[in-house]
Image 1 (tube, helix red, strand yellow):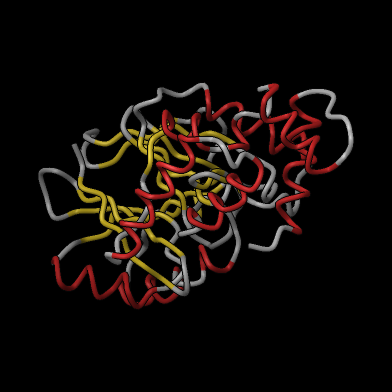
Image 2 (tube, rainbow, N blue to C red; image 1 turned 180 degrees about the horizontal axis):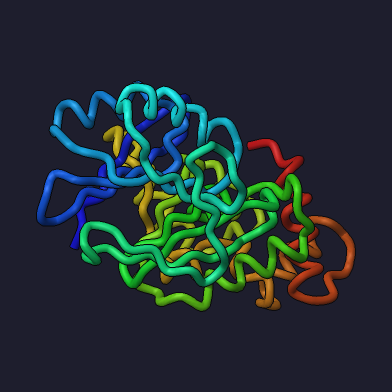
Amino acid sequence: MHNVITIKAFKDNYIWLIKDSQSQHCILVDPGDAKPVLRILEKEKLTVDAILVTHHHEDHVAGIKELLTHFKKEIPIYSKDKLFSGSNRVVDAQILSFFENRLIFNVMFVAGHTLDHVAYYNQESLFCGDTLFSAGCGRVMEGTYAQMFTSLQRITQLDDGIKVYCAHEYTQQNLIFALHLEPNNNALRLYMQKVAKLRQQGLASVPSTLGIEKIINPFLRCEQRSLQNALQAQLGEEIHDALHCFTKLRRYKDVFIC
């Protein structure tokens, strides 16, 4: 087991720090802001072995140059595209090993939010950037709706017990939208209560698990007729299949105001 430390950044971003179980070494996921990272590293006396990048958006990568300058040494950076001079370009299904093989990650390409989007996962954890959120998913900004739908379907094939480490605190807003669609969904109401308690205490609502997401996340339930019927009622138009449901659902969420 490895300890995952939550680092808050900007308004609602999360940077993830994964600490080795047997040393003071760690890796970082999406360090968009260097300052809070450096504070944790100094406080815990940690050494960074690598940086994992899910995609190229500034709130996920803007802190990397400052971190590299601070460390005054080359640190491997893993991403789909060569975003920095020291980048290691990953390929789909590649296996990455850290901490003398005590930590292994699989690489999964999940285009949709961006074309270069990558998720990193093992049997315990999924670091999915802006592809999957708790009770939601990222906007389709560079890819197609079909690509995003396929990426989410790939993620749902993973084990239900895997913890989902997404990159933003959007859970409450996502649940408001989900409940707008299905106001009588008791699972959503119960989860909203749980999340509200966490947020009132200043705690993160993530990680959740894939098992939870398959129950409460409408974007992972687009094949279910009950959700399709709920969306049809909102939009006043027929939903033909799961991809059509996802496309209409994502577009509806884009313009939905809490």
